[in-house]
Image (cartoon, rainbow, N blue to C red; front, side):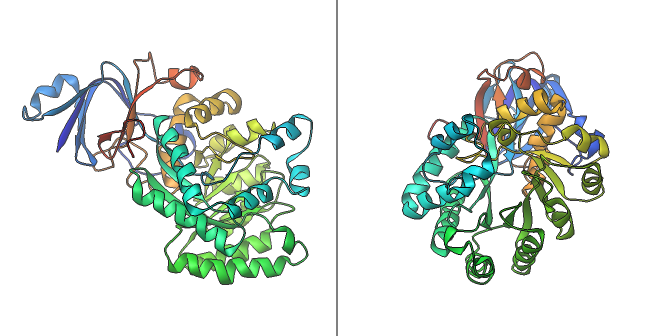
Length: 417
């Protein structure tokens, strides 16, 4: 079945090449004015200028008049913790009063707080709440998303989270990748038995995760007070042996050694990077590891932002993601992420849009099917109300600009999955 989207004011993200955008390339966002887009079944068939529309078959029955709106590839959010139980607004108040992330974690808050709630929740409860969040994100333009475990911290609870993610993969049209993050924090009961917990992660959790095909990636929170570079490398190498590619939480709270470890183990991305040196920027720029920046977290925690301009100017591959989680980034709105990257990290609108689409897709291993408007890729895109330019999208950060969402070639109605 073919569907024609016509009278597109601006068709954005029509990259001919399909590879991560590095350095200055990030500022190139190819667009076509006054365009049409033809979808066949789940994928993009072709596109072109409206003045060539008569060349198409007149037998196309399904037609959607975009009425001058702009069409963008769906957001590809490559770092989230979408599956969780309950909120943490009490810690939000603690932060307002001056408590630091580390102080809240030290008294049983933070990750350990969420872990208790996940352990008590049923799989069905976790699935229902995660599905509601995912539906909301789809309405805001997200079409591909990575979801981590890590709020379980026991064999049973980690597997429960991963099985919820698998159900979301099976029951929704969203492109979803799963990450095993058993090494998110050391549970209280293992405070003086770190090696024992790490052994549980590598020798008990990981084999089941791999056997049941529950994850695509393995992640470790490499930070002081959490997991050291040496521990991170051990866990990542074990994951690699079982077919899981590493992604690493790195340098959020300080120069943790996470960037160096990520490059050394061949991580697809190192994420956060609020604390960086010029040497580390150059290391990433000379590697294939993607620098994934999470401005929602630095905004919510009132921390310094990652050095986006330094990374881009050095020639690194930069992606943007939401870090959606209940403690440090309780929003998965990628429109806000793109706006924040422009306003606070001085990324150009084109750079931010590319980082949240094509580079985000490669940061979660779906660059071959998502992230740009290209024949053969999944027909995942959103259509805005008429806007004067692509720059207006991050500029008007408080406006509801998305009018229609299409995933796998089908218009998505509210709660339609």
